[in-house]
Length: 460
Ligand code: HEM
Image (cartoon, rainbow, N blue to C red; front, side, top):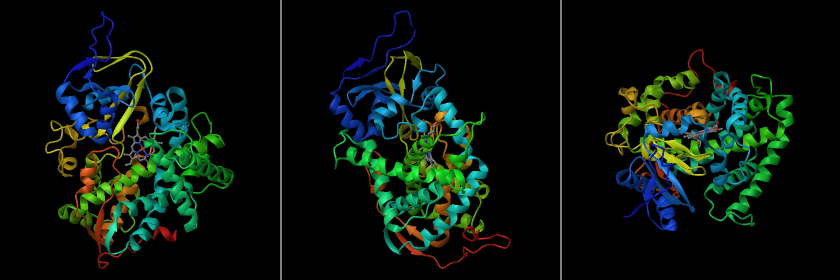
């Protein structure tokens, strides 16, 4: 293999040039999409933690290891931005979403939106989650089930109820489901022309429809707010008393559903998959779920060590967001390397989560890593929610949602997963593979009825 330098730093500078293999741009793009983990491994082995490859017609600096990720996300030089790189990836579909904002604009919007994720708000969302999830588990068919499809449908129901506060008819739900799918899939579209029938064309049509749905709800959510996330955004105020405008609420809601839907589906799938293959951990989770109350509050869910460890380990192995990208807006440096203005830099969560020097037996599902020795690792060795100013605003919601699903599942059914196709598919960015679980209803050994002094959330 022959190598070349990305750029030549100023001769007086002590910075090193970033090096990468000489490959045909199309070949390296396909390799990256097909098997990013192998690309990352060979770059690290042959070049080091900072290297570059070429993808989508441009050089991309790949930063591996928790130290490089921490430096990139801390952005002490204020040189790395989100908008250029995310608008490159997502076009105009999520233009005004929080993640696509930078600097003051981002700071301002985030401070307002924070009000929708306070502990009190989360506790309210948690109360709405229980009856939805319990009903979903009650209707799970026995026998072989396409579990990812089931969880995806559940994530959408949760989004419509807990985020939007609407209970739609089944045909409206189906339509919204199709439209969200069209929007979410657009991120992977290679052809980006608004031609009807193409992925990109369908996504833009879906955006118009989803936006008009949200627009029609804003006045009512401002007048008489409910416990849903959209009402929280409509009411949220920053420290200076500023609120989001109507169109900002619509933009943030559209982005929020995008940010929450697939990620939550992947997290819940990863937990269900791993537990379905591991009787020991399934039993431990069931024991914990049975000793907890029927409808655990947010504080109870966060105090369940087995649940937390299983969640962390499942998304270590299958991080719902495997790559964090940034764009250098000026000449800058990363880990002692020169990064020229305009370069895209990516931190690879997926590869950092399997570094053998940080994670012994990295491919093995072993939640004890997060029970015994969590504190000894670099703070970004585990980084599914990113870090720095853009760190996931919905991370506590994500844990609450996933753990509520596993809680109700473990109390009511047993499930096993035989095939490892799902596990193998996690190496490709383009893979969209589900998995089948075999569901066996349990006799209601620990009935999901309120304990003394506890009321069913559905009765509230
Ligand atoms: C397991 C599930 C989830 C994972 C792994 C995840 C991961 C991430 C990551 C890695 C980022 C940062 C990306 C970057 O810095 O470039 C992010 C940002 C974000 N996430 Fe999540 N997310 C999840 C669930 C959610 C949920 C449930 C919501 C909403 C309720 C949400 C809303 C957001 C928003 C609004 C941002 C942008 C934050 C900002 O720019 O300040 N996410 N998420």
